[in-house]
Image (cartoon, rainbow, N blue to C red; front, side, top):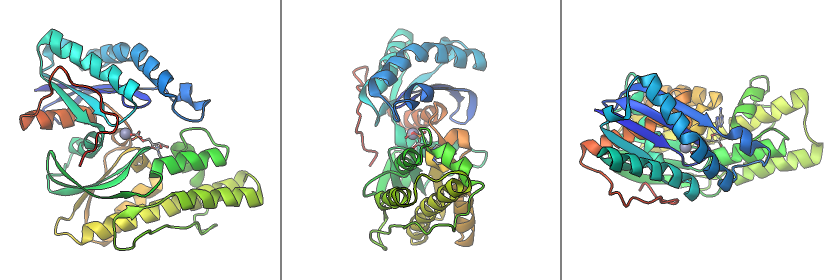
Length: 333
Ligand code: KG4
Ligand code: ZN
């Protein structure tokens, strides 16, 4: 079974070919970050327009790397939500056209399910039941995965998503968009204990996060002391990053520890963060939990995760009609 996975929900045009839901033959990602960077965030119209221009070259590249033609594809999976409506529509329309032209099944995939199932591409992969923390630009949510297709939302952020906090703090610090990678890099040389930024624990026994207070604390720091440079900038980045990693891992582990299920997946763009990866590994080990942490490339947006989620959906008999539409606010659970 060869699955084509298409992802155009935000600012990455991505196409992958995955065999039997686990062997990645090609995974091509074309990022539009350079186009959006000067606006300080993703501009929806520019995103849609660039997906239109990039999707077919990216698809050609994926087919060529996998050394197959479209005729060899058995099913077509596409992100149909959540995300930017215009951006999603580009992928959905392309997938529908190919499904119709080639007479192949079409599967509309939830982007968050894609992030969770990216862990199925790891050499040792999780079998349900497991927990999954999705930490991305738009989401910070812990799910319980009872079975493929059965997701329960255990908790989420009350305000900003973790990635959003990275991006906003980067802007305050005069760093480029998106802020995750530059803050992560600068933090390597910084002291995480230089500043004690707040770790909001809105309700200690509940699974919920809040990052707006942390973001405001960094803003106040900059207003009081001026924009940090050199070592001072590295220290602010490291201290901010420590606060994010600390609150994400603490709440995740507290929630998982209460259950008899001892497996947890951490995924989404922010799960590419070096300190978060390290702290999650340490704390899961200390608490007897098995952590599944996909590679950095599989954490950020890609087509392979969409192919895997589509493959699993198809195996349980789920397909989408050719009337499939983009659903910008599709909730996974
Ligand atoms: O999952 P993703 O690629 O797209 C969404 O579905 O949102 O996540 C993008 C987010 C951005 O906010 C970006 O700043 C953040 O992931 N990110 C990181 C790192 N790499 C990407 N955050 C922290 N550290 C990183 N290394
Ligand atoms: Zn994503």
